[in-house]
Length: 83
Image (tube, rainbow, N blue to C red; front, side):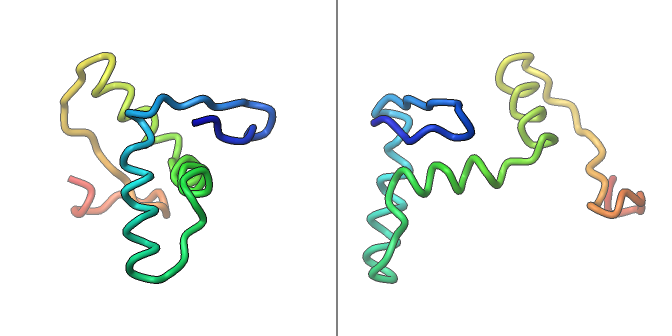
């Protein structure tokens, strides 16, 4: 499946990477009778990723870093919930 370009960055995803989006598309259609389609769901998922989440996934997948990190709230103020 070839998704439309995103800010000039063309994305080509192999079928095994689109399986979850196809499943979500079917589930949304069954549940609500509406879905933005597979390409729309991919764009939504990519748009929701923060730089912190992307870095964390890279560290876990590529660098095999599994340490517990501090996750400060969006306000940037640390409290006991971060630990």
